[in-house]
Image (cartoon, rainbow, N blue to C red):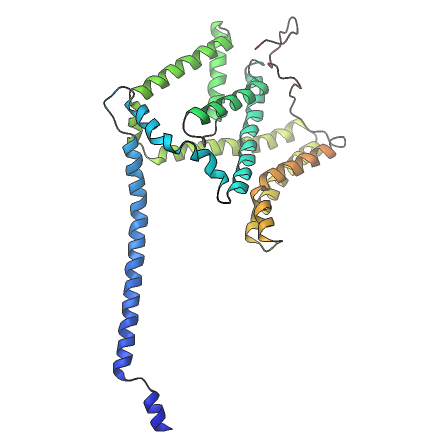
Length: 322
């Protein structure tokens, strides 16, 4: 038995070979990890270089525009159809529904603010129509279908100042607003044709992130401002109902999104619920607010049932034509 155990025991040379092989494997793994880390660090740099190459002075009239068309034309169709290939259809549909509410919500909110600030010259109908038309045209002809077009806080602040300026100078607001858009379009075209966009290569993502933070803060503050106004303008029941609807929509959305990491139902069902969490929450609490509308009244958005301008002539009561 002792002779058998001695025979079965590994020799010193075999143990040394095993140790050397393990050390070699660990060294190869460390080298591979170091290479992956280097590639991960080089990827953003290469991406920034690629984007920087797109923002270079060409020295030719409309050289940058022509280069953009040549660069994006081979991918124009794929930007639209790839979202519905390879099992991406469900996620794409959920994103479309989410972005629909992301676009319609500020259009409704800022539309009512625009109507109040401009005395009905620009209202909810105009905001929704302009958001839809500009969004469709921009996605079709600008080569970037992912950009969201719509009203924002800075635009609202500018509109208020511009309307006050027109009113103090005795100018008609809508014609002045039309000329403002035409001049802005002219300056934008000149900047594009002269490759002035190349100046953006000297800016970092910090500017974009700060602007995104500004927009986020504006919407968050606006939501809390609405709750505070509810307690000032409504009775206790109405303010309490408004608060429940606001916080309930947010809580239900977060809870449904957590289904993706839970063990509830099957994986397919969890993905569907998590992807459509925002739409489900909005529909649920809109229904709750409608069911208890007779018991506790809260402000509802007043929108004309007809597709017509918001402003009406105070003397004749006639609706302004398009």
